Length: 157
Ligand SMILES: [Zn+2]
Ligand SMILES: [Zn+2]
Image 1: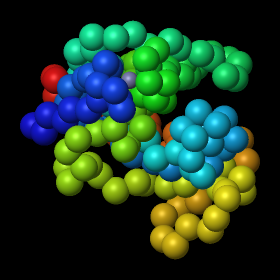
Image 2: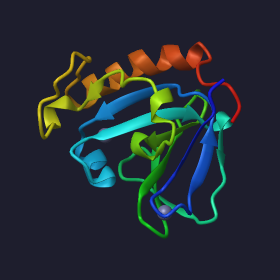
Image 3: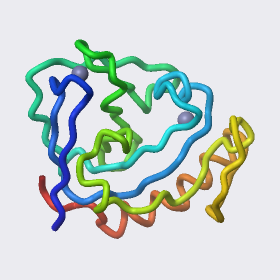
Image 4: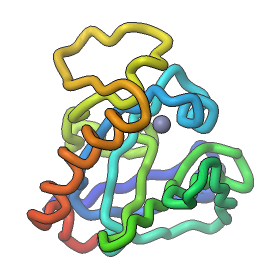
């Protein structure tokens, strides 16, 4: 199975992962602020298939209740580097801003756009697009749950 790796700008935060579960794009305002970009491009991995090899530390913040997603930045270079997703009844996940992954040619294409109504620019693709909180959560679940339940991304790092 593919083993992927990545690191933040300064290299203090490093990790290796198993195969991705899913990749997606989010245009919500929290993501825009956290990623410092017009939209978030993130790839999801199982925490069980993720291993941190950092020499520095990450500070996590909850930006929205309930605290399902903790967003972490590198204490040294302030890069948005690791997000921890904990949903009741599901395996824990790591969300990695896709740009930090080294093996870009081994990554899946994004599956969809979330919060597309908050976009800065139109996207020139045919991916599914959801607007608003409820629509975005439903589209996320429709792609994420089958991938998780089928065991995708279970290979160890
Ligand atoms: Zn760093
Ligand atoms: Zn978002």
